[in-house]
Image (cartoon, rainbow, N blue to C red; front, side, top):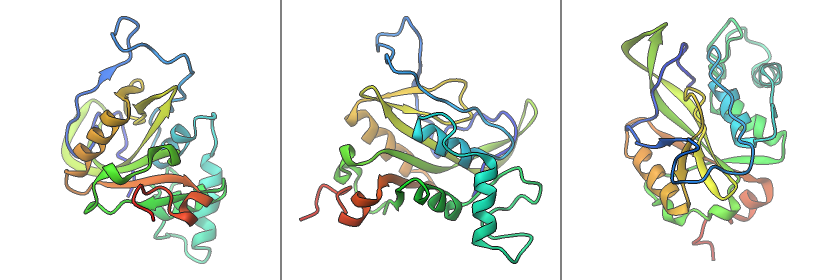
Length: 211
């Protein structure tokens, strides 16, 4: 699982209409600075991680390369990174290991459950793996590849921080976020990871139905 090279514009499993941030929009701009890395090579996993953490470049390409090499030290072509040229295309194992170096865990979301049971205050961010159009320069090819995108709350508002977008896109408050997640999860080959602190994962408090 990874990203499609080139300046593609795929926004997920199912198209989702969101507004780009404009000063004239009725939704006020956040007073917080929103960190948004743009797509380079096949580094969408790196961009999704950094966009979720919102503290600048939390991870580097070298750091993720080191992680995949440690996951499969005796093979030149590992199951955790499909690109032999160091361009990225990292899979979920690399993302999970990267999060653990920062004291976080990735919780795979069971799509049989409704997102209303997610305890949003206990979730730092979201990483989705979605089909995205494969492009060659300005041409959009009739092919799709998997792509990682980050979603994060900044200043009380949730944003789609897909690295293929020209700018962060406003999702809205909690109700709008749940609608966005339901919309994405209805699509084929779409997966959701909750990014939570280690103690939240251990206590399962990312769920509202924990007794």
